[in-house]
Image (cartoon, rainbow, N blue to C red; front, side, top):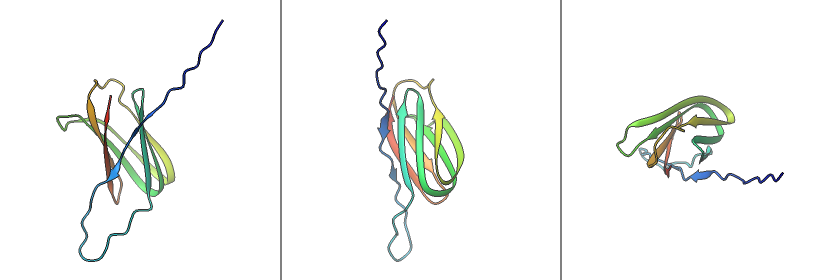
Length: 108
């Protein structure tokens, strides 16, 4: 009997903080850290240095919401969303925090 284990590698989603405008003065960089991956129908978002609500939205090419998840983070944590039934294509992940929005594109 031969057992072959093939490592699954998640595809990283390059998420960037969306620009915000401020009145006068310079904007301070956020201490919050966000990392997102897609693997086999599941989006995983790791959040650190943040306390509050995290909302995940996945939009298709027609700007229609095809996935949504929400969770509360206290310091650091992970939010996951299953989009396994979503057809192949290009999608946009939006991560909405209380104080910022991050987004990035990925393909299935």
